[in-house]
Length: 392
Image: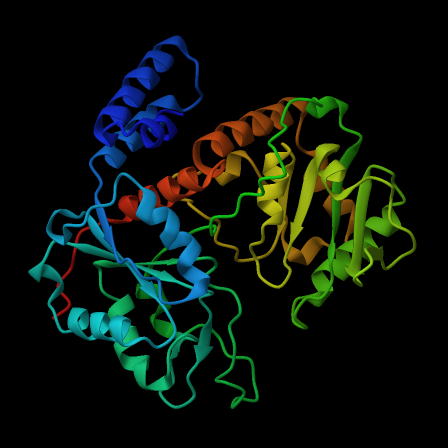
């Protein structure tokens, strides 16, 4: 709230953040906010953070992120005073190639700066020619430079889901390839691209968790990539065999006239109403491991159920997802008893605590574009605390 006021009334961000720290310290004493002490420490870090970013995103896919970065009070036009440098990695632009060439030629310890490389739709392909992977935004000739860049201890790669969509080399391979071996040396931070549905206002408390009609629900598309298609279809079949009105899984397609479920007519509840009436919301692997469905569930106070092995959740450095979500391994989705047990083990008190944590984390980190950018900056800032190592 204070940061939003600073934007409206042009108040210095340092004063705003200092006021927030004072307010939160008082609330710590009063026991008003769960984990407030951690919040105070994060705000202290954020108040000392400065970042530099370019003015031109170069590609439409990253322009939304850059637009909100440029509005942040923590942005500086002086590279020398910046805590870290944010670079957009677009498709084969000379500007980014020059940045890569200059940085990889510089010893890591020559400058105490950290660099955040923000990737658009980051996918790793297997380069059959050089035997390693590189982002699909790059030509094969950039493979070596890219490997040298991302393995530097002063570089943080920001991405939507680093470990998703591993492909073969531009159709030249006949087998599915694994992740390149150098990945273990790369520092990452996951992010959710700024996505706030203005028409969907947050509505946590109008229906108490104990009064929600459904235990877990899903309504969504099944146009998944072939390797992931079975996850949603298997869940749909498992829920169908439960024969319970408390579990709803509706998989279907849009045909231009509306959404049509595969297994007969859809329920009368609207898409948003299903979230609103559910204790849990299934967030299964689709076209990617991460999707906007998670944000929609949180806005309605439904606890996300991630059925997406290997998903790296956004802002894990500052958001404690374990306290506000459930992970179910893909290996049990065909077992209705195991699926039901995974949710039945949570008591009413557990559900209420998770519901409270959803509200707290949403308001703090996920409720606006500004909050998302702050979460992104803090996540990157948390990674800058690691020591630099000599890359020479």
